[in-house]
Image (tube, rainbow, N blue to C red; front, side):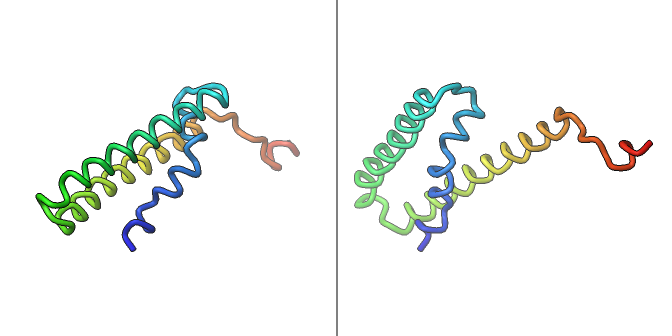
Length: 102
């Protein structure tokens, strides 16, 4: 259940936009960055879990993973909140109806 509610599907789905906002300008760069970062993190996390599951057990690894995912998702949410706030500050103001009539 925890695997499905972690938000990783949303991160993977929007990874091209995330990397474009991070400065990867064309689709090839975004796809390459997505493939390497998401794929590499998945492989490394799986290898670590396989190596540590017998030593520490499933529950401690589950809780450590939940803490890590929570920190990561809060960081992503904070980055998007800052980005949206920054975009609103730098975006040109749309003309208002009252301003158009005056």
